[in-house]
Image 1 (cartoon, rainbow, N blue to C red):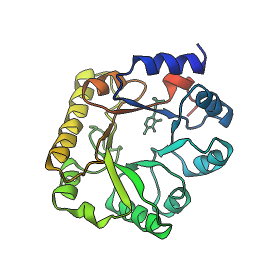
Image 2: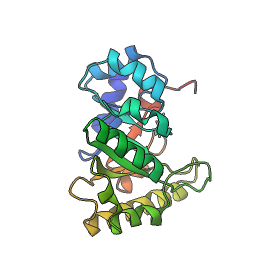
Image 3: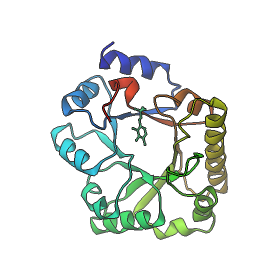
Image 4: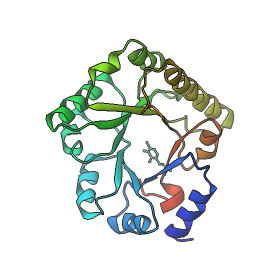
Length: 221
Ligand SMILES: *Cc1c(COP(=O)(O)O)cnc(C)c1O
């Protein structure tokens, strides 16, 4: 199957409330253009240098999502055009996004990345820390940030039960924030699920999946 077919097969298998972010890291612009021509408008990238090299070469109605580790000193390069930063993993980074967005008078959509995996290598907010940000009204301190939801990555394991529990924990936090009303009307996205675990994620309440390999094939990195 070529990219067009893979995209259509994947999209037609998704429930209507689930948004697909095509993860295009390490793929050349021709490949992204092909996916765009097949109707895909949302792309995810995880490196600033690569993203700023690609975006001027592609159609301007693409919604770019940043999904990787973001260094605070690089925030300024992406705020002028980024649609959503999915990987806000610390208050320090959140503050820098607020600062840079204010500077150019833009409001940036963000997802808070929450640490749900067993491994210590994956970063993000603790569940309690994330909840408090809303319950203690700390989120009011970021007028140039639109909090659109949460993002999480499960442990890389064949143990589906574990993956399921990790996603369910994030869904629980998401619901708690929504029920508190402190996330506002815009707090609607739960980004979880990649090529290997997106069906489990969707079963557990995902509204947004981030898929690369299943669309574009195996990556070198
Ligand atoms: C690379 C990446 C993905 C996509 O991974 P695939 O296994 O290729 O689908 C999703 N989310 C994040 C944060 C990634 O870095």
